[in-house]
Length: 291
Image (tube, rainbow, N blue to C red; front, side):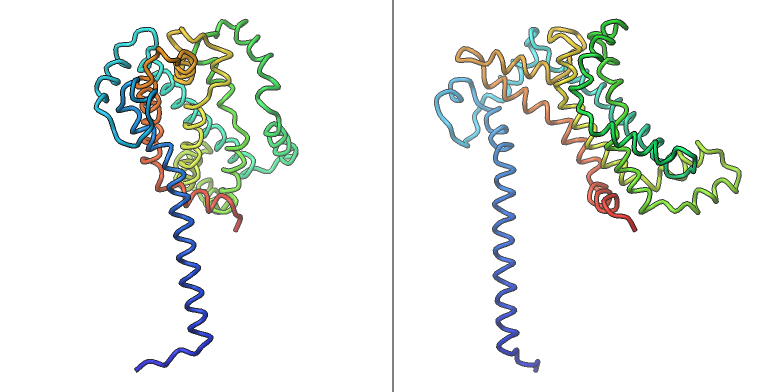
């Protein structure tokens, strides 16, 4: 027979159980609060305009296919064309910004040169400058270069991201021993070979995390596209079309179609997250501490 618990041990066990119960209750409530807007969106995209404007409930409707057909056949607001544009821009921005930032972080981390600290400070200083400060001058430059209403006008300023650079560099300091880089050099590998085939596989968790963040940020980016594109442009991104739909949403507009558009816009984000989510916890944990 086991030893009988003392009074203090029983009290400690009871306190532990109570704390766990409270923790689970708080976590369940927090999860419910986070999921509630998403559930409302899923329910509302199945309803017609009359139901949405008259009552509120969580019972799904039967107008899912009708709303989807309305979105597909609407020529004034080409949602799927805008989704393709956003997918192109977000893919190029996320992959390009992560690769360029990782290459920059590798240069700062793996090389010793006279202005190394100054370069790091300069990049961090850029991180403190809001996008709005330089936006007006950039818009004038884009117009002068003939890139207005073009993908590249939106893509270029998003390829250099100091925040991604800093995150990757911190991850390198905790997970990339210089001995591995030196071994690659001794074996005769050139620097780009070492970076692409030795360094990047080690950095895969951190890069995957930043790919998710940059894809979501670019997918939801409204500030730059609304300065550099017209809403009716063939290259307009999805946030511009969604904003145009919301602006025209009134008592005579089909709100069911609006919710369907909003539901469609989150599909690529969910897909990207599901593909890369296994890296996110490990990447954040290792990239946030050194040693």
